[in-house]
Amino acid sequence: MGPPGLPHWFFTSYSDIRSNFPLVERFHQDVERWVGQILGRQTPGRGFVDVRDVKPGELWEDRIVRNGVCTSMAMLVLYSPSYFQSHWCAREWTVFTARVGRHRSEACAPSCLIGVLWQKGKQDWPDAVNAYHYVRRGPDSVYERHGLVHLVPRGPEGHESTEYREIVLEVADLVADARAAALPHIRVGETAHLRPPFGPESDLPVDFVVAYTEQDRSWGEWVHTYLDTHGSVDVLRLDGPADPRGERLRIALRRAGRVVLLVSRHSLAVGPLRREALETAFADPSLCSDLAKLTPFFIEDVPDEAFPPGLLPLSGGELHGVPDTEAVQDMIRTAVKAPVTDPAVVRQAEPAYPSNAVSSFERTLAHALALAPAVGRPAAREVWFELTGLDPGYAPSAELPTLLWAFAVVRAGRQVPHGYEGIALALESIAPDTQETLQVRSLVDGHKGAPDP
Image (cartoon, rainbow, N blue to C red; front, side, top):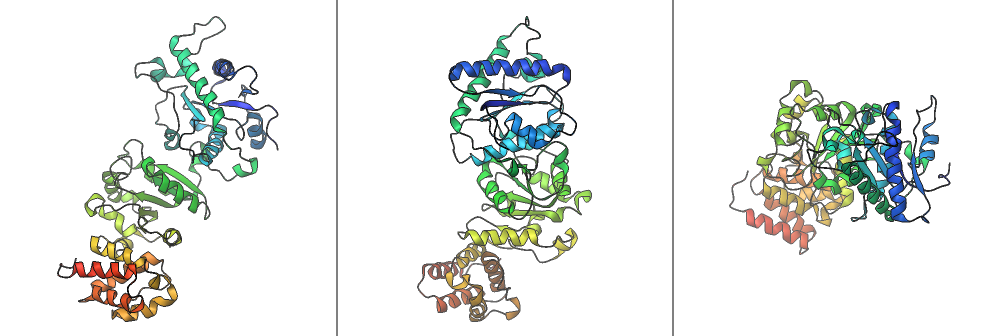
């Protein structure tokens, strides 16, 4: 199916009772009229709004082609409690935000998704919605207290308030600005795999949920893109209000095969999965059976005292500071593909990397060792480990990702006197005078005389 014959400046996405359809149409037409004046009479295009009920049996593909979800320059969203419960609206929002996501490389791109509070509700908005533009007014305004539906003029003689006119003009300006963004189109066939973050489909099972804060978006989007090649992925934003009962984590754990939590100082200080909330979750017996599906990855160096101890037995590793992209991908794949183990067993077993018993020195040494090309090849690792003089029983599998393997070697060096010295000597015998070897030697010499952890 091709795009509509007439390009849409924007389309209006909404869900409301039939008696409010004329109000939706009035607001849409007022915005459309002002957009036309801003862009000029000779600029081709118009707005689109569907003021009719969905027909039984109507095909989704027909609808998104008709209303321009895949091709319109902007989407005007009228948020309401009914909107977040609508299958159609959730799908429209998801397809359009997928287009916006493709355009995010442009840091200064105008807002193409324009949210308006149409009807005030009692429930918080879904996490994903808060990441996009939302027209705001003062806390005492009719708009913020009740919603725009109470400001739209009733009938041709209805009074147009100053507050209403200001909102119309603001939205029209945003729609006109969006025309310059040249938002990429999306093919109808590419929309089938997209999973809405709200609406009836939002409780469907997914393979992975990735949880991260807005400040850590670059990491979150990178991990999301990688996991998308291995299954279905949804997002849990961590910038929303506190969640003392852990409902958002509970929902994510129920839906997903794995919940990948990207841990940073920021994520542990704000939002629904801050340190206190995680500690509460670990103490909740009703969550015990699901917590093994939580897989934290540390995306920056977080002080030991900043994170709850319960995270460490579940950890998939430290992703920061690893220069090899393939090694990072190996770490993620190994962690999320590993069998989910009963939490009680996980907590009794030897801590996985990174361990709470790993000192800052050992972390630095493992990262330096992982950079050495001489030990980056699995075929050479067995020979190299023999040169360390360490107990062969502590030899890690040569098939582990490089950084995980390096941490296992460092832990083995901890078990015997002068074990770290053996690691440095082995590297010097294989690759003398390289920068990586000199760095390992410097770390080991600097550690001599310091008490082991």
